[in-house]
Image 1 (cartoon, rainbow, N blue to C red):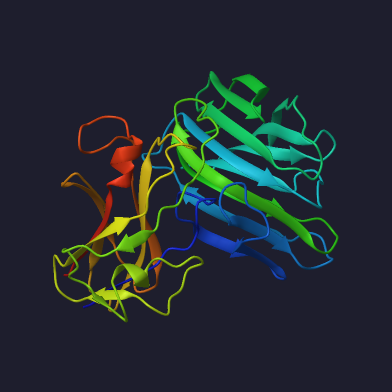
Image 2 (image 1 turned 45 degrees about the vertical axis):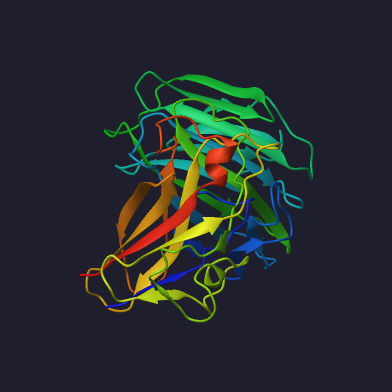
Length: 338
């Protein structure tokens, strides 16, 4: 059966991992928005449109490799709601227990919880109605730790039992908004990056879009060129590239990276795709760096999903990324037809 590839949707201010199990409550939504962004033009918007309390919205993201020492970096803006526990960042263990940051509406900062028990209150507050940066890393163990920085200052440095169950690794992280009474409540999240091992620093998600076809352009565009069907911001499912031939691939040129403002730490290739029938098709998504291919194969469903591939180092090396190497990258995707 055919594989259809359509554009992914968020520009350089956005989350570097596909979401799963997005839960929107009644009269509450979670969308990509231009209302606020730390980097680029878009952010993830948790929007409450109802005056009643008790509404919740959540989205979860998978941690690659189920690390025992997960880490996050993200920016937030809460322009008109600062109630306690309005927002939570939950690290979920495979056995169901969790480690969590909860917003404290009195101190304007994060507190650390292990399976619903407060273990340490944050010490660094932020200014109301202004964006702030959070970094967190933790170790899951009987003698573990939870470390949090707010705007670069250490706010939590907890040592103690962070393993409430049998599991010692983190499978998912949840972003969880719990709204209180009042209309028009908003929370924005931007530059959300997942990693492991230590504080990640102030990382930004800089988007680079396809700009041209190359000689490798097997897929059939619905109209125009292959690159122009998947370069939209925001996303569109109106145009797409499609193939029903095994090993058909496209390699698309990309725009330049801003190496003056940013130093590249990793690259993530994205695609949004589905198969046209339930036949076990897959898609390979990744990059070509100086003729060296680096891709990940993912099984497709019959509904559109985001697929991604991350390289911490330049596959043509190995070695750290630099401006020239990122500028020369090609986006590659290949059909695997059952």
